[in-house]
Image 1 (cartoon, rainbow, N blue to C red):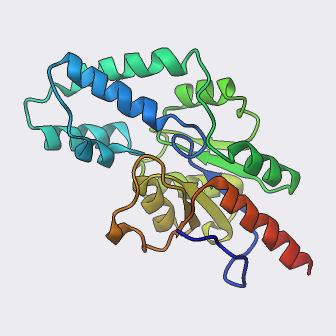
Image 2 (tube, rainbow, N blue to C red; image 1 turned 90 degrees about the vertical axis):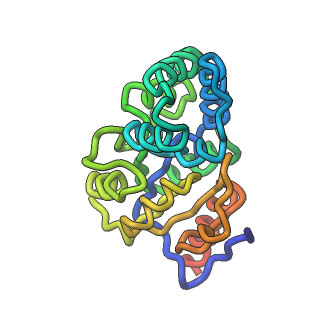
Length: 233
């Protein structure tokens, strides 16, 4: 990954669509750890290479991936329920730490008058709680949450819906993601995609799908500020 330099190939976005977990909130580690704990309670030692495939995915896709990965005897319903109990016990009562650069880029885009939407696989009730506890609930004009589109990530539907709500063409918008599922969704929708890997770094064949890999949200904020100065000339 290298620093992105403002140039003619980038344009100031008409709007920006953010992922939430792993991109704005440091919640993916908590999700992984509570999943492992739930599996251990049921006598399973989970293969985290299988788990990595569910990061940024929907409930339905998670069920398919885990059942296929761990076999037909995997007690998905029981483990999923216990996983949810452990995870919710934290996120419903305690704020999840924000990722490096999250508040700064949101503030910069707000000051510049750039509309922002959220496209998350998390259900709306949980997303609203997490955003409120992190004091980020005022940062978005629209939310597209898990189960609110015909198909979730890695399909383009959440990003297409977010752009529709924003009233902007996908080609004029930026998408900020951490996971490959989210990155594939945003690319398929036609947005300019910046990926800030969190728990799972893309495999070699996943690094050149059309996204721009960066170290942190600070890199994207720096690019945006450079574009503003470059445009002002």
